[in-house]
Image (cartoon, rainbow, N blue to C red; front, side, top):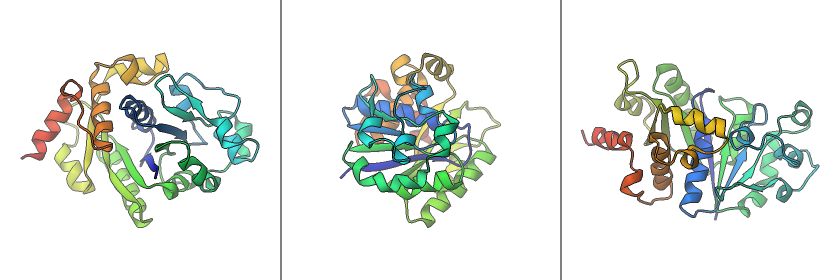
Length: 255
């Protein structure tokens, strides 16, 4: 049985799409069969992240009945399969994420793990993605507005009967102005799947149009994403992939 994992966030700009891309790539590096779906039709970013902003067939064409699902699947060099959404305003008008549920059975045949990059917030697009989820992962930053919105998202998902697997905290600098990991955990009452530090290699990977785990595999961010991916599939990442931030998190949990 395949796993539908929805990556979502209470607000935009917290690193949700970057997380979706890098988790898909990291899971593929563990030889998992993964498909990444851009379920953010309004402001899709997956194609931009992976160097394919324009492709012949997109998820929009599938949802509007103009193409079969198999025609919208592309294989990335990482080994992950990708179903991108269209950047065209014209294609946006003719597609609706509510139609995704009609393709759920076919999507489960595509890969063992299907990761959905949801729209941010709690609008209709985000809710449509959450409806598909077997598991929900929430991405947030270590500041009160982002964590408050993450809490709202968690409550909505739980009220829908969805399993919230945990939270990924991104763009962590360790400054005194940030919320502590302990405070975030206490507020959200969710497992912390991982901590991704602020890392300029993320921006470099975006300019190179690839996942940071491939462009800068020894970077702090890459090691964090590999550690999180290992946790998702219940595997132990190698010691060299265990980031300083993960070790700090383990130490904090032990207090």
